[in-house]
Amino acid sequence: MPDTAPEGQYLCHVDEIAERQARGFGPFGTSKRKIVVVRKDGRYFGWLDSCPHYSTGTPMAWKTDAYLNGERTHLTCHSHGALFEIETGDCVLGPCLGQTLTRVNIRISDEGGIFVATSLTEEKK
Ligand code: FES
Image (cartoon, rainbow, N blue to C red):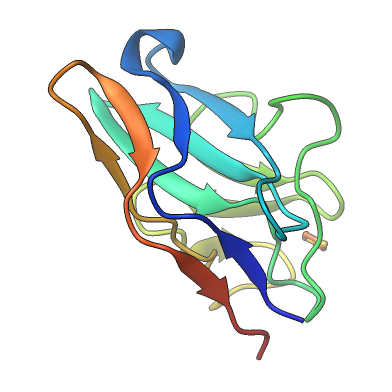
C-alpha cells in the first residue's frame, strides 16, 4: 500500500524551524511516515522520513526530530549511519550510497506557513 501525504497539509510556521534544524511532522492521512522539513541557508527542504536502505523504508531518527548529523551538515539515518545531502536527498555515505530520499514538495505562504505542496504517493521500488 502506498504512503500518501495530503496536498495542502499545514506543517508549521517558518519561524518554528531554526537554521540547520530539522523537524518531523505527521504522519498524516494514510501515511505511515512522517514528513521531515529541514532549514538550511534560509531555505526549506521537505523529505519523507523513510530511509531507502531497505525497500520497506525505515524511520530515520532515533529520537524526536533527530534527523541531522552532529555537525548539522547532512540528514542522517541512525539505523546504520547513512548521510544524505539536505538539498538533494542523495545518500553520500553509508549502505544506501547512490540512493535518494523521497522528496516532499512544500510551499511557503505569504504569512510564512509551510504546507505540503503536492500530494505525495510513495511508490516502493
Ligand atoms: S536503515 Fe537507514 S541506513 Fe540502514
